[in-house]
Length: 464
Image (tube, rainbow, N blue to C red; front, side, top):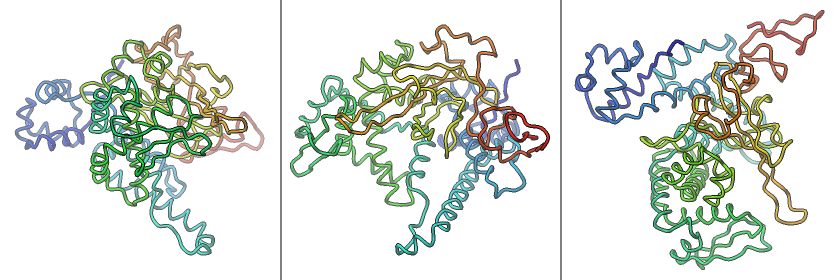
């Protein structure tokens, strides 16, 4: 089996800049010549195993940062953006996109921001008559998308907040009682019976109301969310300042996201949760029971265990609704999800709605040849009363098969046979597969061949 060469010039330059070393001094510490370092930083040569070893020994570098990071996300986002019909010359070769992502990541992000602005402008133009009738058009990009991108490119791991939550959880004994943590802050807890809220806080009375209809894990999470807003405001504001959001709305939405992050990290403290995950071989039900959390909270937290020097298994995590729309997405693996629209219909997450209360397992292979162990489960949120609406979602958690032995859900599956891996994609419009029987729309970057005298599964043939 051939080993894929590792080109990570941008990460190498970033490391040297962070250490405030000149190229000459950096080359000396790595034991290479100055021209050789220059060639690696400009991706003219791959990073050798000797250099990787020197990075670890000299600087304590986390090798995992070289394998998965912004590069794969940028390539995925560039492919999707360049599939837009406005680019009539077709999609550039994958190798070119990888060169752009690795050699000029700032330029790639600028292009994505420009394309996103173009899409937003088109949407505003399409609704101009209605907007003028209402007295104006709201400028700027979608604050929601801007916040999602912020967490996406942070690898969904924010070290300062994660560590602050871990310290708080230990000092406040969150695992014993969130009520004690509230009382220590002088906050009274009351039942929000009869109110159409999950959480409501009165700063003047220092009273927190929580819905009794919500599950116990949800109540704990919401209490920790409010505690985060009260105790970590300075840290949140500093983080938001660094993020440089374009609108106050985006900043406000991001603050909710940061408080949610703190709540999840306090409910499932990094060190203890990572140790428990390894001990149970990532058994979601056992972890949920041990930490008093929901299956969704556990699955989401597993996908964020990316602390430098103490990383867990790299998982992807998504949540989809019954229409197939992705409502939460994060990937610490090479698998990156489409920013817009639904997920591949061949993926087992869609079948989870048919089998409530059961875990579905799937061995899947993406068009790039990567293989994954995928786990899916329907998760319903009861309304808590007669006629109250039930929110239904399905969650999916997965890892590359190289980590499958560390996950209990791989037991009994034959990982050695190619036939056991089902072909899946990302989204139809950027999927390279030509013979998919579930394709909903043609791939935008490909030519189609139409034969009026022949019909197979699809009314056209993807010609390349």
